[in-house]
Length: 392
Image 1 (tube, rainbow, N blue to C red):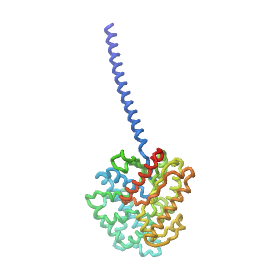
Image 2: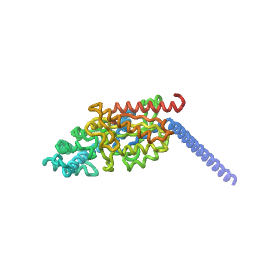
Image 3: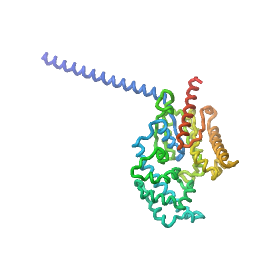
Image 4: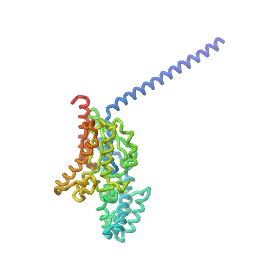
């Protein structure tokens, strides 16, 4: 009996020792997790949160890709290859828009004959329009590329392209049409430039962490940049990101003053941008948030503004040209810039007027300019941090 009790007590002691060791191990793991959470929380305090906002087609996602190329490792071969179906889809979608646009203009325009396809290209046009209307697009073959090139060179398609602002023709059209042979190569791997031109609508939220000084994080700020969908149906996903933002980078495509929205062809894109900028400025959570306004697509703006008057946009109907050539381009740009500045101060409560507000002229496809712009943004935000810390 005693030996039986002794044996059971030994088992109990052994189990107790086992449980104590297990508890001790679990406690150590819990303590390690807590320590890591504290470390990460402390590290998070030093990360500046940037929110990239703008209407659809404002070029903000191109800015986002440029940041990845400039301040991270860029795109590896797998990532580059992942853009092949996107780029091929862009080509098919674009030629469909042009083909269908030419048919519409041929039916409704007073100079309808300019938009009628040559007889030998009508069948090609219908075939390509059918492909462009599918949900899944085939790989771009040499045969399809040859057909697209033939249709692109048709006088009716060129006339239609000249009215692209009325038809939702994407900015990447000329670039991809000039590179059809390369894009249709069996061994095609997209270049960095191809990826920058590729159009894919941002849905949801994507983020990237970077430092404008490169890998040496100790010598500069670390930023986490969030890019969100710009189309109207995507904007409800922005709200949860609004808290704790260091700066809003708002992209406005200044070349789109004569274009309408993809999702609402009755609404002028510049008017939509104006209203969106105004709405963002009035958000309570941005009371102390810096605002960086990127007046984007200047490369398209400077080509367009000499031919299409700014006054076609309701917001710019008081614009008066004063000159020609480069002088007129600068005058037009300064007019647009002033309109945004006036809107900023009009939409900013008196107690918020001292928050940082900077305006930058940008072309999202110009890597050197984007790099220079982000260095200036970084410098501005670092100065603000030093000022708030009482060091300036």
